[in-house]
Amino acid sequence: MKCALDLLQPLLDGRPRALARAISWMENGHPEARELMALLWPHMGKAVVVGLTGAPGAGKSTLTDQLARVLRSEGKKVGILAVDPTSPFSGGAILGDRIRMNHISDDPGIFIRSMATRGALGGLARATQDAIDLLDAAGFDVVLVETVGVGQDEVDVVSCVQTCIVVLIPGMGDDIQAIKAGIMEVADIFVINKADRDGVEKVEREIEGMKSLAAIRSWDPPALRTVAALGEGIGEVLAKIREHGIWLREHGGLQKKAKERAKLRFNSLLAEEASRRAKAKAGQERVENLIAAIADRRLDPYAAVAEVMREKNSF
Amino acid sequence: MKCALDLLQPLLDGRPRALARAISWMENGHPEARELMALLWPHMGKAVVVGLTGAPGAGKSTLTDQLARVLRSEGKKVGILAVDPTSPFSGGAILGDRIRMNHISDDPGIFIRSMATRGALGGLARATQDAIDLLDAAGFDVVLVETVGVGQDEVDVVSCVQTCIVVLIPGMGDDIQAIKAGIMEVADIFVINKADRDGVEKVEREIEGMKSLAAIRSWDPPALRTVAALGEGIGEVLAKIREHGIWLREHGGLQKKAKERAKLRFNSLLAEEASRRAKAKAGQERVENLIAAIADRRLDPYAAVAEVMREKNSF
Image (cartoon, rainbow over all chains, first blue to last red; front, side, top):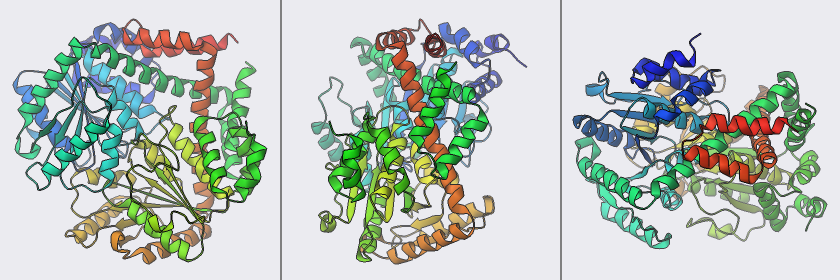
């Protein structure tokens, strides 16, 4: 078995295979995962992390790919994490049926990974945070985190990156309003993609209306138009990301984001670890019996959990 | 302060205010929540629980409302839970900007609740499960659980209900394919809503293609067409839900679903409770110091969690 020290130098050198393995370690809770994170920790904190969220079909992947393409042309190393809890696949090799980045998939300056492990509760958000840190330590200048889902975990992930982009498109239904209202507070930049379609002014008006209801922030999130499939408007998005980065530095925003991210990391890792230990102490058979008792309605779930927690106190 | 016993009879009588309060208790981790669940537990297990998921803009709310309308016309009591992690609002009174069910909002045979509490990790999925149980105990014949988000938590919620409906619409982009692939295994019924639009045959072909890749199940999930806004196709969806219920009973599927749901409930409640206790033992100040240390990069998150867990062992 490889140990954490064996992976350290290849990771710091940005070797793709080492990265892929390290991310898998984090996903699967490998025994050396904690040690590896401790070794890499001093080497982090340099990458610019950008999150992209929004409704399915909004073209987040295409936008992500285009941003990566422009960044690569500037010589930047780019990591892409596609967070997709609904995908049955995880890993760097299988990216589902997505047609992406054929022109740069052999480029060592780019690393693409689909994050889809449906493990323990909170595991996906936590593993994504770990992967961001690994890419950071491996010398990637920019990490683009794209979420396919738009649930709680996904919003949590993108809300504590440096710059959060919310991608909208013209002509969506009612539900999209709810999404916009909820992520208003975390959006740093709105991108109206597929802006060559009808209804782009309507979306702009809706964003303005929403902003007038939201708490006043000293950073006013702009709404940019793109046609990602044609590469239109990408430079403007990148310029805004940089402008936002400068603004954050000048207004103490980086520390605030780091604090939020630290809180999320701590909470999700604690939930995972605390329940893992509680289960380990109770033993698998006992846990399975309790679950069976809940299913048969002999025991309610609160009572079952209380039993496991009592078990623990006897140690 | 009200105690669990005070709420018992009003809840069993299906009183809306008692229900609203009890759901809030579960959301907020009220000290009497556990006792209330224990008291109600023997009164559950009768409700038919139907989940609706799918991309934003697919018309899930409209479909939910139409199903409720038809069920009400048959004299059934219907509970609706709208799971919306992106909404800043929670509770029965505020349903965001949704225009729904004006014609039956005063009907005591219907109970609508928006579930949006962004509390502890896993809290939303857990609170939704609690709310399903409360509606069940309160004598609601059918509980419709509609998810606005399509993330991990939401998929988890709808995947362990009796019948899981995946709502699609013609003309969505590439991301929708990823969603379909991922929830293929949990879909019991596909509904192609807005079926008066172009591209409905394309969606049908895609569903068929997906099914040919998926593991063969003895229940073959059908694809039904609806135009929910016009009330078209609703009866067929309801008939399929019933057919699926009969099939489940005949094939031992109800026990299997109950088992999955019990497992989800146990795991999410355990994660919540175990991390709550670990934090309580460490003390708020210590937890805040650890989070600050992670944010400042003095400590990695794995080490921070290990410290809190060690703390606990000293008790």
